[in-house]
Image 1: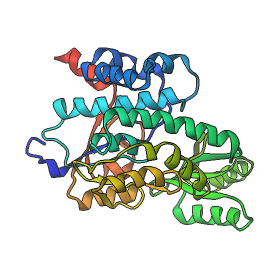
Image 2: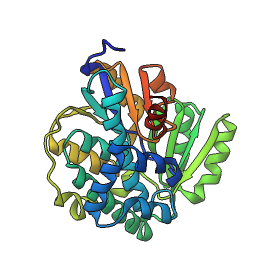
Image 3: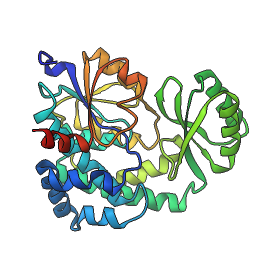
Length: 313
């Protein structure tokens, strides 16, 4: 790996999964790059991010989201210094990871990315308290794409919302649908030999959320200036390389209404010449699925890695 050049390395920021305060506490308070960035986040928001994350319930609270963003960016900084032979020449951020990618690529300053994350979290929470309160996003594996298409077709034929929110791998899907329709979907998953994993509230990535996209633009992103990224950001929607601030801005907004397609992102990274991906952040998904491991040398950098490195040095 010592001969790997920048154009062969991608920094990947994972989508956000449930992350407990205990998962990042030591990293956030003991690793210099982390506690420096958390201090900057505190200043940007006017409150102690870690303290509020510790004291607030909910996997996707405003404070959890900001803490996840800061952790990912601090881990990327550590990885460039300690885990990679050259700076990455491209980056990607599936789903929530797009916020981290926008900051890492320099389209947003760190403080603006923190502010945006907090404000978007409030906007989303308010929206789903008023709209689409019965929708969820359900994830499952081991179901073939044609079977998934058939199951969703049966729902949409009855006028029900049933959208692919995320395509994580060939047989790994996340579907946004009504909670009332979930028992029937789960029955179909079992009949197809699949395995249901978890159900997310609030839901995500559906054309039904066009008004949320509009609100997020008017209430949050219109307040920000997006600069040209210093390195290409690969879209997690269609794999296109984004090289302007406007494109990165639209990527974040389109995340409300467009499907996250990780296999397509992988294909685009490969076409870009990437052979090694560093997945920076708390992650049990993107660094592990076959779509990633069969195509790249994977360098996972989670919150424990800098602590272990310090212990062994």
